[in-house]
Image (cartoon, rainbow, N blue to C red; front, side, top):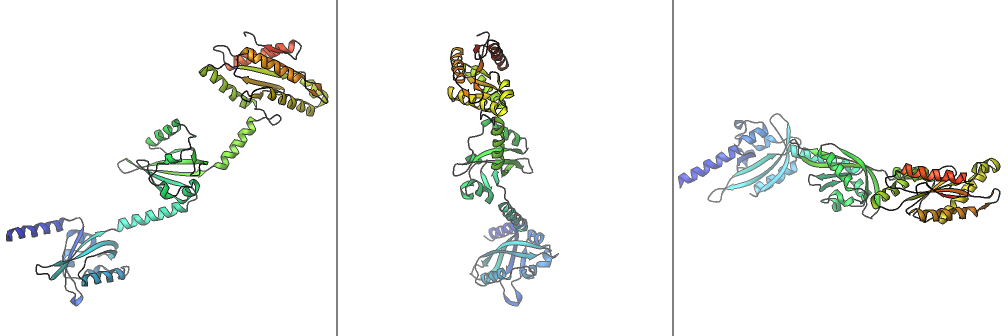
Amino acid sequence: MLQENAEKTQLIALASEQAYNAVLITDADFNNGGPFIEYCNPAFCQMTGYKREELLGRSPRILQGPQTNLDVIASLRQALEKRTFWEGSAINYRKDSETYVVSWNVSPVFSENGKLSHFVSVQQNITSRIKAERERDMLVKALNQASDPVLVTDEKECIVFVNAAFEKLTGYSAEESLGQTPAFLNSGEQSAAFYRKMWQTLEKNQPFQARFVNRRKDGSCYYVEQSIAPVQDEKGRYTHFISTSWQVDEIVEREKALIAMAEEDKLTGLLTRRAGDEELAKAYYLYREEKRPLSVIICDIDCFKAVNDTYGHLAGDRVIQQVTKTLQEQVRPSDPVIRWGGEEFLVVIHAPMPTAMELAERLRRAVSMLKDKEVGRVTISLGIAEVLPEESIDQLLGRADGALYRAKRNGRNVAMPASGQ
């Protein structure tokens, strides 16, 4: 039995000597400035900068100084006098007067007959942790005061932080956002290819910057220029992704307005040639991929130069507007009418040649019924072409233009089919 107790005592001594945390044992004598130190392990000496022989027989109060919180010490003293467990933290001083923050607990030790004999304390230097927490709190405070939204996710894409600007922009509170993935903001306006490119960039440890169209809590969409950067640990493993963004709704609206101005002819309200090229390309794609028929009609106001020369440009503009209105009244809403040139118009229809010819003749007759108050009767000539197999857009337009030229030569006010039809 004695041997067993001796082995246990030796084991405890070895454990204390080799423990990572600091261990301190004092007596339980409160007289003459006690309790006093009876044991400290190497970790305690390393933490305080004192040698063991410098500590034995002295009061732990040698570690206190001007910045030590006396309320904490008073609380400790009360617990010791009541012989109860205590834990807390305070600023202590090393031998070289350098401060450190210590977290420690103290337990009373009783002998076999129940008499208080010692106090044992386990301590840890938490200075680095406190510093990191303060820096984190400072960073969080700074981010929350930032005017631009900030979002942080972990390596599993779960949101771990959003700032106040993010909450204001999206309408989602931090509580609603944390634990979600950023996908909950997706508006559906951007393709899967867009997000594949994003991840391909991030996986190369490169920041990704692009314009995102996201959706708020209330369902409305907003535009942001967003920058996402991966964060790696010392082993090169992804730990977080940090996203910063700035709202660009006003910029997008201005861009849309500029595009609309570029795509809409000011005089007629029709699509410009630039926008018409895009419409024609879309129609050609449907012809190639979905085998939908495609025809074009090129219309030109007859003797328009003479109108301008004789009656002036105001009269010429008025005639163009009258012809525009007439053409729009005759076509389907799905068939775009484009101002192709000065007095030239292009109609794009998904229909075969016979239907296109019928429409062209209807357009010709409707315009021929116009009578301007100054100019008098107005007529147009038309060239019509249906796309041929393996024919390009330029070739299609070239044949329609050739048909228009022949219509002019044949006396004007004529709808002429293209060659090869």
